[in-house]
Image (cartoon, rainbow over all chains, first blue to last red; front, side, top):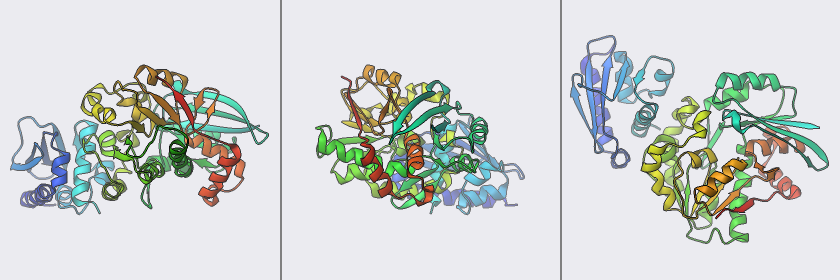
Length: 117
Length: 303
């Protein structure tokens, strides 16, 4: 089990990886989304805000998320640190991503572009 | 009579059956769509296993390529592994030969592909040989893999960048359910109007639009005489392209009674003719057989 602070740190690492990737920002310039990141084993929520290609992070839940990412704290921290890709936990049901299929594919893609081999 | 069946995840409305003679051998070639139903496709494959001479997998790829790296689509592999006795192919072995040759044929025999032609490949990792051929012939190619498969409006303009993005993303994305990456079943029958508005300009900026027909069709705006290079087209598809303003249709696979079948079907026929296990078949085997069969691209003027 990871702590809330570890999830926060992993999201900061994810944000840093994203924001220093100019190509990724260009790719997502049209994709404004508010994403809830929620642990289901500890009280921990964060909000990812993608606007005009820039990614920011806030602690706490958003009012109206476009996408919800829900998993156990360990999986969330591992995933946003890039230790695991979202695909396996998504396929085995550990990770739930609630949103349109297009958005789910795109989130997966962003993660792979940051942390992929 | 040799029987070749293409089992497709695509719409059953496109089902078709023809008989042709090749090298004096009668072939019954049929296509059976399962409307995107994966379990139904598995059941049909198991039913056909050992009862037909070769099986093609349609509406799905098993192998994608970027450069020398091969990526395995897990859903495609599951389908392939459900067949144990009959040779089963997805067309990727032949694509590398046939579609590359088609591009060179167009340059050498038509005026449809002069140097600097602007080409949109709606997807290139499913036909990397074609992508390499366009590049080798000094075409200005836009690879639309991210645009049309992932919904990311980022045109890739070099094979190097395509390989790099593929290397980062495909090992994992190939594990996703195939329908998340490619239109299957009923989605093949309808156009995505929202995305046509967003991405239709990539078609209009090109002179040649190449690649998988279902992807081309799904996002196709009204054209201004562009050439379409594809396969798996029916008579209805030809009418559709004509109404949409396409100039020419080039199909990489030969016409059998008004229908251009997918490369999976043609590869399955070739496996029967070559009488060799699929892993032992080389690109040269395909090339020699293509020459002996005198298979040439079909070029149809539409408007």
